[in-house]
Length: 295
Length: 285
Image (cartoon, rainbow over all chains, first blue to last red; front, side, top):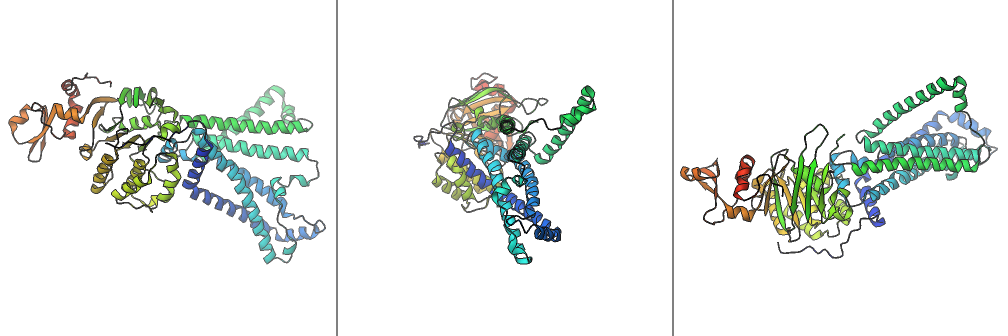
């Protein structure tokens, strides 16, 4: 017992450190790298299989549509189906990714690791959000584009009209084909804001579920959500019928009024605030989580 | 350096408390053996010190900071080796390079030295290791982090005989004047030669604590065949070829502390033991 640990130059700050957050991000990617790669592989396979099945099952119709729409060069009728599928996959992906945000809390050993790694809760949460929000979105976009490139390649090889088939443009994919209907920009923008907002909100719901229900969190959160939504819908309808009569139910779900730019902005803010609130709820729970689960 | 004040903890509202009004103060520069029967609260105490469990009542201060906050400055200065080590599915070198950055005093030479002492290689895949090997690897990493406090929960469980010897040797070599090691165990024989201090826990609190020096000064431990000696003993137990006997040290001769005997005696007669050491029978350190 004669040596001394040199404690000079070893000051560790307790406030948010960008450097430590990126170190945690790298650490997380290393330990969960295999799972993330499998997830991306599965996502790509799912998208590619869906696109190819769509092409195969509708090949004759597709060829017919293609012939009919040959007058509009640069447009491929399958893009519409692709965008519908992209939307469905985006929602599903964000829900699954949401249930993985607090995935390190699912087993005792990983819980201990996440609680004892020297980084603040905010740094850890930031790293997870980068992976599961930004990462999921990038993965979805890249996989969609790659699957579409694969479709075009296969059609070039196996169909006679392959040379006239084009890759979907990134803008069309990101806007989910909504700006092609000729209905102005407000309605599609509102729709996109609501869709992306809902996706983000849904992810935050599943993220909260993953910290409160760490084991089989996707399944448990889905069930809880279904039950809560059913109860809420039932109570709303019954309540409206009880107090305002049958007509109020129809009017409640009708278009509330003229669409304006400010309404879209408020809608976007609403989704972001609601999602942030849920993420904050999850973060507060995380701060109180222990290596032993008491509930 | 480590100060625990009136700590209480239970695992559920309907379950009895594991610790109740537990207080303790530990200064740097010692290897503390935390001894106690199963369920005494040893592991719980280590997790509470680390901040992995949050106390119902009371505070744990490490260098003046409440460990409940799980602040990086505290976490980067404490290392916990759990009883069951869970490691991710990756290679050791990748794990080390990813995690060592969080510990400013991490020393790769120490890691290599520890791995070498345990007979482990650097280029291993962690999920392919047995439980004992995982423990060796993680203990090597923990010691290499060079933190001022190392908490080990049943570190010798699952280790082979050379592994236990290597563990004792490494702990002794890497112990420094400004470091604390707290080793929780019920396998007292494995650590007899290593400890500087003994803390014996039972029934939600510490029932006896002493330095090894003080134990050797006040008590002597002998193996004897003479029944007359046995009859004068504070405590004895049958042993191969006679009796293991614990006596008051009247000759000022230093003997090796028989922790197993002391532990049994403390569990049964901690009031008497504390009287011998001029301590209050209900210890609140």
